[in-house]
Image 1: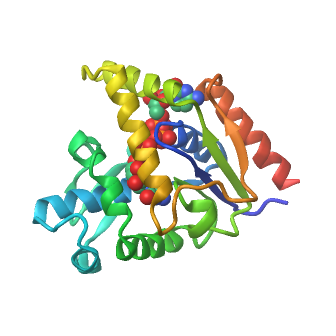
Image 2: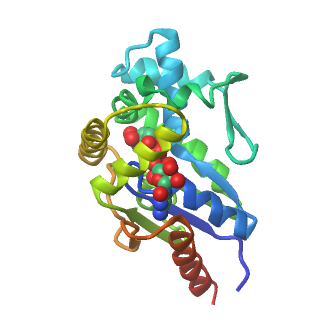
Amino acid sequence: MQTKMQIAIDGPASAGKSTVAKLVAKKLNYIYCDTGAMYRATTWKALQMGVSLDDDQALGKMLETMELSFKPNEPEQLVFVDGTDVTTAIRLPEITNNVSLVSAQPSVRKNLTERQQQIASEGGIVMDGRDIGTTVLPNAQVKIFLVASVHERALRRFKENQAKGIDTPLAKLEAEIKARDYKDSHREVSPLIKADDAILLDTTSLDIAQATDEIMKIVKNTEK
Ligand code: CDP
Ligand code: CDP
């Protein structure tokens, strides 16, 4: 069977979702969609406009007119909000530390979920996030729940930061990751949770190539 599938990759912060999702998309010649970037972009705009980050109604109104788009640009996708390139800005700590509050607001989830469903409507997509397998694409043909130990995930972020010349202590990164996991898993709307039919993949001792191979095996088995 050679259909253009929907592939959902969910999991906690720094499990390697976006890295492997991008590689899987490339191998299959599928589109890649980073839903975390959409929540980050919403947080960026709210901060710019001085909208309170827990004001569900105001955030919903802001999103009604917010233009959000992606542009392929190897190795990373560019993200635009109302024509402004926010690719770098949405990765700053101010956004990372506030995004879970914004992403817990029901009107934000509704608006972004609808956009994501629209992007994925024709299949041929690898989408990563927290609620793709449970809420955004409940009928996705492949669902992966990617995990790794907190220590390993903090270590990965630490190395990533070091490569960028950012020096954040490992213990701080570990605490931030734990706090974000807790908030993402305990919110009322679409919390981070493994879909019943998702395949659990623990990448604590897998490198990027091995994790990508494991997912490709699952995809090939689904195609049979
Ligand atoms: O890459 P990283 O693990 O740091 O996070 P991300 O994928 O960029 O997502 C940033 C935040 O957006 C998460 O901590 C969640 O609060 C939120 N998010 C969400 O609620 N639902 C999604 N489908 C994707 C992200
Ligand atoms: O998207 P998510 O937050 O789940 O994670 P990521 O941004 O794809 O990966 C976080 C960091 O871990 C990146 O620097 C990846 O290169 C690295 N990584 C790794 O070392 N081993 C893996 N199996 C997957 C990712």
